[in-house]
Length: 73
Image (cartoon, rainbow, N blue to C red; front, top):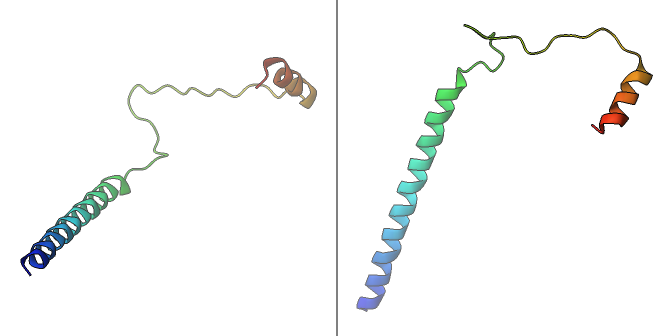
């Protein structure tokens, strides 16, 4: 009889620890979501940011294909 109670107590401890860890995980994920929710991915850079893309003159399709096959990209 006492082994049944010991097993029941161990199962209850496991269940309580599982629930607490699940709740902790949930609230951490919720806090991370709240932190990144207001972050604008496409916001214009500020400060000393440099524009890295500069449009080139229009090239024809055959020249683009030639570059593609030469460079193997």
